[in-house]
Image 1: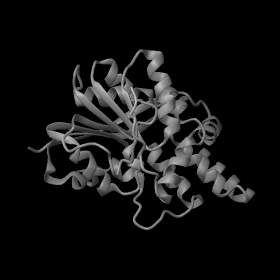
Image 2: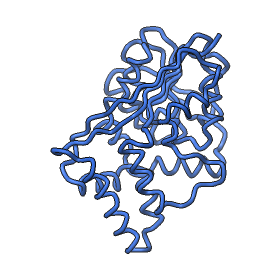
Image 3: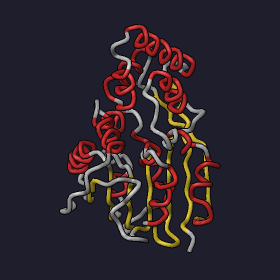
Image 4: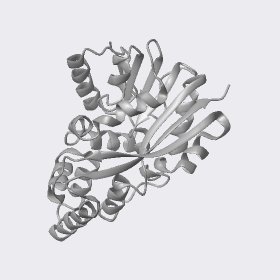
Length: 275
């Protein structure tokens, strides 16, 4: 099932974001490192057969596919066509049927109140303008419907990884907010405001035992994770800065790695759209 209408071309900032997430192999990260998160979000949202579900910034379907396998009517939307194409292949292999739509999280091509559940699993946190994104999440959710968000916290490992990379990355354009702010419950509460009820925010952790040594994590993310790849490209012509970034990431992992495993903190938010 596919959308027949073509989305408008993205502006320069969105085009840059789209290109960044097409770098490397994010579907590998979603399937082999953070695969448990999608199912966790689907359970928290209480998704069941026949529910109309929108997964925003769905990537390759980490949460969309589990929801579809439960019998929900799922639309997976993302800015990056390469991720959607990977998701189509994964869904077909698992026997899941859902719609895949290229869409900007800050300007969703759906009508007001179209969905029973609107969710995002470490996705919308990377949209550059937080309030515009939150406004869209609320708008397309029906009154009484569920909004579910799972995002990395600023204090957790991935939030700290972004803080570690920040001095080596290009400065963000004016008005662009840091992605890990979506892992701050007060920030998310302020974005959604009084348009939701039953706001619930829980800090939880993903146990990751894929990387036995800091170098293994660093090389995997340098090969597969778009933001890390883009950061290294920015300093690629300065060997000293590349070496410094290598060392900084290795130090970060070493501080979190215990007996060959790490725990990555995330914030799980659920709320109901007010009537």
